[in-house]
Length: 249
Image 1 (tube, rainbow, N blue to C red):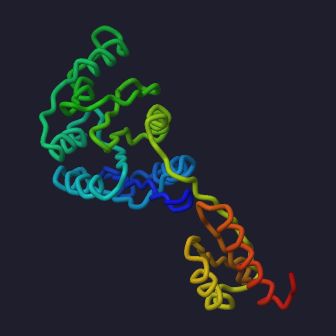
Image 2 (image 1 turned 90 degrees about the horizontal axis):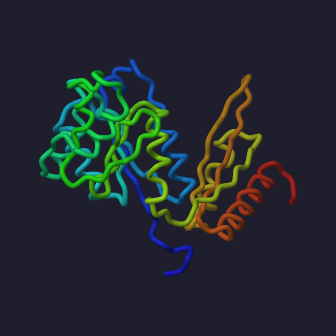
Image 3 (image 1 turned 180 degrees about the vertical axis):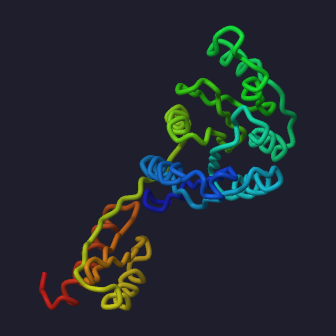
């Protein structure tokens, strides 16, 4: 298998929380995770947003962990009664869950005497056999079980957890991209763009229409893990655009 034909490293993301589905909280983690993974050569291939219901979290996690190289979750590992993600992960893997001595020590050292309440101790409940994920923002650790990484839903905390696990993630070839802004509506180039895609199967060509003040334009984004493929496909798109505009290149 050549360098350009290496199997992609893939990921799924389970976003947990009634507040996301109701609209009370606007998700900021999906885009951040997508950018983070792209930078290290991992394709975010599927995202599921599920409510605080154990059976739905279990189903989503078990489906995605069998389908992708890595799975990430956000939300539902706090101190309140509806933070049930840790219990759901334990159920998904069929293992017990209890207060983890490592997590208890981290949290006990973090809180002043008398403030490590029973509610806060809930954040030390970790499925048996899991590795802890460091949380330099607020101490309460996430955890990794198999290929599943369980993290906080608060964006800045999740981001610190991603930084902590980054060295443990094995990425594939990085996806490269090139954008071409076209002063034409998408319909003027769609048919020939499909032919360019067909002729360059190792690239991915996306077409994104825009409209401003009644003027329709299109942005074309060419993606490939191979710089040679990217260059050839981009040249073909540029030639298509030049022809559509009646120009020569």
